[in-house]
Length: 435
Image (cartoon, rainbow, N blue to C red):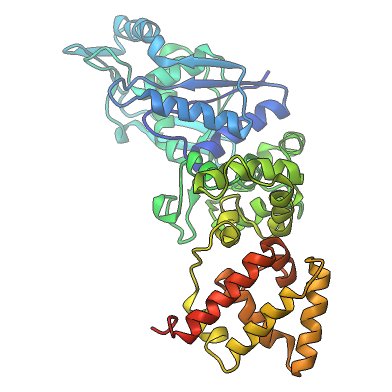
């Protein structure tokens, strides 16, 4: 039975690269009816913190990546001491104070096979003697990693290619302890769009940041799967269940994956667009509460309709208050470029005042009746509809882009729409928009 693991260190938050590594291990285990082990490598008791552990566990649960077994290395120090003593007793290691050091064999060749890269050979002259147990009694990474991977019967080690340098050191320890090494799969790192290793300058790196920014777990999983894995088709949208059916190590790419925020936004937007409107509304409500846009007395039917109007325009949940904030507050931020282009032109005040009058006459106040009255007005003035609608859109929303203007007006309501238009007329006449 295939056995794989993800082994994060609780010295920091779970980042994009770690989540992708975890996903590939999880998919391999689930697609082969194997076992997926989560091992917390918390041997650094100074830097390891509970807040990081909690975030890692919460992020994995949020992504839908469950585990079959959970281990903490901090609870296994006695095991590492036992195996270090074995190497000490047989002369393969020596003591340096309280530390135990493995003696690197001279003039030896270390060979190992990487599933993606083939055979790799490194001479021991490139390596230094390896610490097994530190003077404070804690194990060194490469040593406890080998002991645990052997005792937990790992069949495959799927990890980032930044660990290739550790592999020959670990192979030596497997051999010294008489243990069978697993198969190694070193997947290429994730790079930013500039080709350099993924870092904060390329955007958010922690999974929690993406969660807080309104990305959906299904979308993040979908996107991460395609960062380094090729499905062999043009298909772009995968559920976790479908990924399990189709995942194969044979289709893992050998070149670095490029993290493209625009692409992630597109994928996330597709999931939002296809989401049940009631579920989407329920997810957006906390975002609006945090912004102070709604309280307990909000109109659920009105809000659901408004979200339906915007759902095809949302790359993330957090974009809803950004795009539709003008529905919830009268403190409108007017884009200067839109003001200059659509408000500071001849006849704008006259058009806006006449538009407000047309709205006053609209009864019932719905998009059909509003559009009918506005079309009559436009024809009477002998102007192009855009000459009136563009200034109205800026007056109501603050910018030049929105869903249909008549839907916008219906959701704003008669009183607020008229008041906002006339307020802009007053500002224009008082030259308050001039800078």
